[in-house]
Length: 85
Image (tube, rainbow, N blue to C red; front, side, top):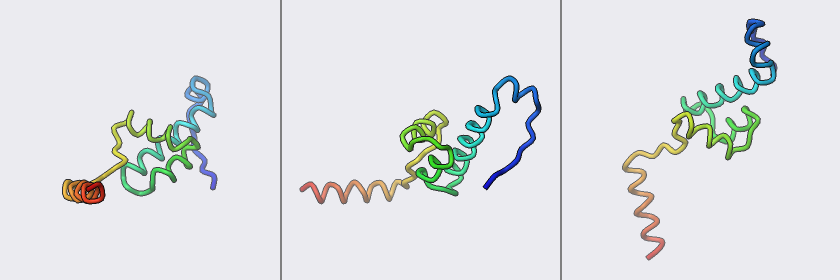
């Protein structure tokens, strides 16, 4: 799918069209993950970067990628403890 967006020439001249396109894809992917609309792997695909680079971007933008409640986290730790003993 292709989306067309009008950007003022002054921005295109200053940043370059390919840079603007990369940034828009990244910011869109970050916001969709933040809103819980897509997975991290799909977001990395949308941003056209590796999943590791996308996780780094999430960290730099304070976007959590693991969203466990306290109860879920406690249950996971209990399961791990049981498996190790």
